[in-house]
Image (cartoon, rainbow, N blue to C red; front, side, top):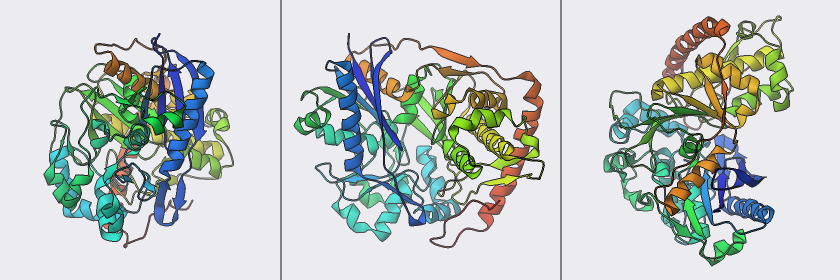
Length: 496
C-alpha cells in the first residue's frame, strides 16, 4: 500500500500527515513556526527555520509509521516573497504575505490605475504582501537584495529547492500577480505596469502539471529518508485545500476558516473582465481546463483571536461565548479588517480598518465575540458571492473546530456547509495531487463529511444583517479612499 507524507507549511504551524491510499491518516506531527513581527507592519520568516521545521515533522511522522513512505508531497502558504540565490539559500529573510511595508505602493497603484492595468492581463488583484508591490518596494529601497537573488519565489518552492536542489514552481503559486492563467505564462504587460520588467528573470517558469522531483543528498539527510525518494511540490495551500475537501464539480466551492479567510469556487473558464473589481485571482489547478476563482480575504481567525484577547478569553471559550449572545449580538456589529496590510478580497484597500459598533451597557463580552464572528461570516458571504458560488460548499480550517461557529457561518450564508472529517485537508489535497503525478489516472476517493444546515428562524435576521454590512462597507470604503495615508504610516484598528 503506497503511503505518502503530506506536509503543509503554514504561516504559523508546519504539519505533516501520512496518508494511505484510501485517504486515511496514519500518523501526524506539527511544529510552531516563528514569525518576526517588526515595526511598520513588517512580517518576516527565516527560511532555515522553516526548512528545519519541515525536517522535524517529517522525521517524527516517519518514526511513527515505522516504515519508509513512498513519497513526500509539499504544500503551504502562498504569496509573500522568498528570495534565494542559485543554491537555494535565502539572500534576506522571507517577506510574509501578511507584510504591510508596500501598503503605500498599493494605495498609489489603486489610484493611478496600475493594478487595473495588470488585472486586465492576469485577472489577479494585488495587495501589499504579494510579488508586484514587494518587488517594486525592494527595487526602490533594497535593490541589493534583488541583485543578489537568483529566484523570487514562494514558500513551497523554496523548501522544495532545499530538499531536491531543483527550482520547481507550481502554477498556482505563480498566479499572483503576473501570470496569465489561460496560458500559464507571465504577462509582460503586468510586469511592466508594476515597474519590475527588468526583474522578470527572477521569476521561475511554472512547472508542467505532474512534475515529480527527488530528494538529493542534503534533503535526504534533513528528512531522514532515502536519497531519490519522490517529492511533489504544490499546489499551495488554497487549491490544495479545495482538492482535499472534495471540490470536484464546476460551481462547487470551499471556505477556509484559517489565518486567511479563503473562498474558492471551481470554474471551467477564466473571465478577465477589465471592468471588474481588481481583486482575488484565478488559480491554476493540476487540470489545464479548470481554475479556482479565489477570494482570499485577510479577515480570518486572527480577527477572532484579537477579540478573544480583548475580552480576556481563549479559543476554548468560543462555543460558550457564542451561546451567551443571541443572533444579532444584541445590536453590536463589527468590521473584521484588522490586518495592518488592509484587505485584499473581494476588494483591495490597504487602509481598511476594523471596528466595533453598537456597544452599550446592555452588551457584554459575548456580544463582542459574536459580532466579530458574524462579521467574518458576512465577509465570507461577500467573497463567495464575488467568486460565483452556485454549487455545494465545503468548510474547513482551524475555525471548524468550533461547531457552534460553523453553524453560525451556515446561518449567515443561508446555505448548508459540509465539513470534511479529515482536518488536514491541505495535506490530503497535495497527497492526492502527488498520487496523480505518480500514477496518472488516479482518482481520489470521496471523503466523509459532516453537514451543517442553516436555521430557518434566523434567516431574515441575517439577510438584513448582510444588507446592512454591505451598505456600511460601501460607505466606509469611500471614507478610506478619500484620505490616503502619508508615506510610511500604517493604519490601526479604531479604538473602542
